[in-house]
Length: 125
Image (cartoon, rainbow, N blue to C red; front, side, top):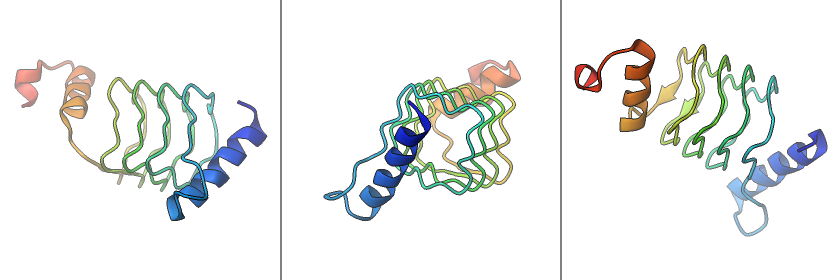
């Protein structure tokens, strides 16, 4: 995706969040958003499966209920972001800054933290 397509997808998503009949949910699956500045962006319920968000600035962004399955968030700034209900199955969160982030501890997240800390799942339960 090129910059203007991403900007349009985000604009339509903002409209969709206020009125699903007039806008479109952001569908950025597989998009390369490496190093993108998405601070304070409202990406609630966005479809971001397999999206490359490595080193992106998502500080204070809303990613509530977003689908981030297999997304690359390595080194991303997620400080103060809202990740409540986000699907992070298979997401790469290595080196990501989650300081102050709101996150739901689902089984997938618990498995991820176990993997990152190199503990057995039974030790993390």
